[in-house]
Length: 51
Image 1: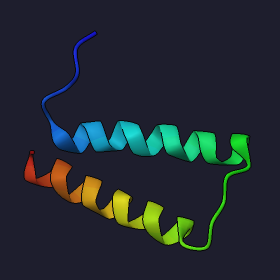
Image 2: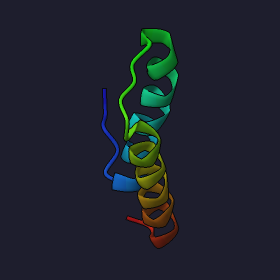
Image 3: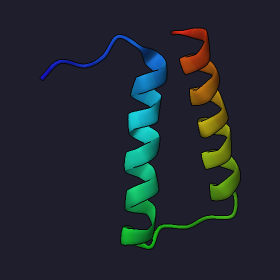
Image 4: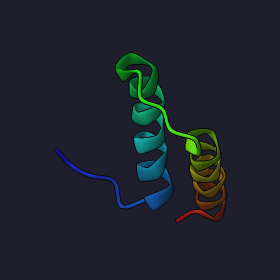
């Protein structure tokens, strides 16, 4: 299995997996929405910049 060198796409994959697993595992804490939003913004910025 080859891991991508593009950090933005790697973060996107992690974000998508986390977004899918959070409701399935009924995982929650007070800052979860803020954390996921920050990861999404960082991922989008890295993909746009091309890293």
